[in-house]
Image 1 (cartoon, rainbow, N blue to C red):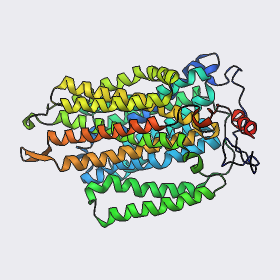
Image 2 (spheres, helix red, strand yellow; image 1 turned 135 degrees about the horizontal axis):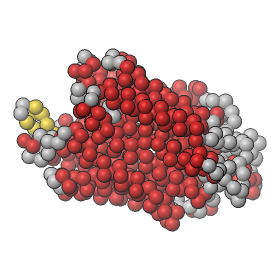
Image 3 (cartoon, rainbow, N blue to C red; image 1 turned 90 degrees about the vertical axis):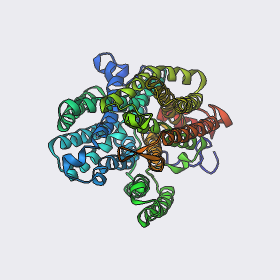
Image 4 (cartoon, one colour; image 1 turned 45 degrees about the vertical axis):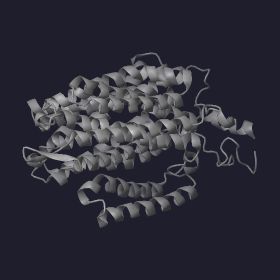
Amino acid sequence: MVNGYSPEFPYRPLERPVAPIPVPPARSAPPAGPAGRPGIRGRLTVPVLALGGALMAVMQTVVVPLLPDLPRLTGASAGTVSWMVTATLLSGAVLTPVLGRAGDMYGKRRVLLIALALMTLGSLLCALTSDVGVLITARALQGAAAAVVPLSISILRDELPPERTGSAVALMSSTVGIGAALGLPLAALVIQYVNWHAMFWVTTGLGSVGLLLAWWAVRESPVRTPGRFDVLGALGLAAGLVCLLLAVSQGGDWGWGSPRIAGLFAGCVLILALWCLQQLRAERPLVDLRLASRTRVALPHLTALLVGFGFYANSLVTAQLVQAPKATGYGLGLSIVGSGLCLLPGGVIMLLFSPLSARISAARGPRVTLALGAAVLALGYAVRIADSRDLWMIIVGATTVATGTTLAYSALPTLILRAVPSGQTASANGVNVLMRTIGQATCSAAVAAILVHHTSPVSGAPVPTLHGYLLAFAMAGSVALVACAVALAIPADGAGGVRRLRGSAAASHDEALEGA
């Protein structure tokens, strides 16, 4: 120990330890969490948490088939209606790291239930109204559900024995894709055969079931980080992210060179720069930037952004491409339900491949799984470029992209869990999910820009050309290859003399004392 600092965590004074309390049982002891206890509750903990993650993704995607009809249904403009997506994106990006930090401090189960309750309340409000202002507010409430996955992953680390953590985390990560693949055809079926309010009643019922099951089956984790919540840091991060994501999501509509967009980007840079200074000086920061700047944490965050960008083009483009009219020469003229079913095999693959990704991570390390996933993702886009006219090839390409996404998303939380102390797992995974969100928002803007500039008139209306779609695939595939390279640059376990962090608070602190 030099000047009172631990060589394992040189930025954290041992005189003011922030190790989580209370100390959980040693690894050799029987698992204390619900998954380790006899009875039905213990056996259902992992499935219930996975259900929560899938419901979060379903809530985010069910509104997509409605977007073309919502201006007529609500009497609002298309620009106003688009805020039903933007509001969820913004609130999710802001609340994910905030709720993750709150979970580390005040109890992950407690914050998880709050996130699920806000998600369900938002769905209920959507079912009760046609007022676009209330709908946008309700969708913003649903954005809180984005914190469900990082909170659940942190609970799994605290509660499960080591031999079960990898597969459970992989399953939890894949629920995002599974829920998204199920949400589109579910929403399309309900809208087509009933009405759009019925769709939100269905999701309200599903959310209520998920909330009650989580309250019944999930035990509160004993691992917490004491301290005062960084309100100023939360407000600063929220302001910076709103400026960034608002500029990225609205740049196409407002004009990338418009004063509003330029002002938002400038405001984002200024606010986040001041926020970083505040976080470095705060005694208990919202985001530990010194920890986040370490190679073993920073590179997984960067890879999450790139993978988020790479995979999202598949969801954005596939539905549009197969619904394009046959008069375009490439479109298949499928219905909304048909386009949603094209993505369904990808959701099934994500469910089936999550155990495989855990085995690869156990045998070769999560960085190898992450790099492999990014490479497979790029391969999927190569298939899309080779043939985007035949339905079976479109499904093969989309499913290949989903397979790569499963491998990558399953490895990212494991890398984060191995690189941060157990008292910061929820907040660190929240930041990782935030980086995915920023990648998706950037991808959405980039794909929109490409398709807008590559259109041709069909029946008097501009329709994206096949060349535009292929350019979008090439862009996403190239970003996936960059993600593969960044993943390979992540230090392997044990590199540079850095040891794996064990899951308990006592282990983290003891290792620091041993290094002294």
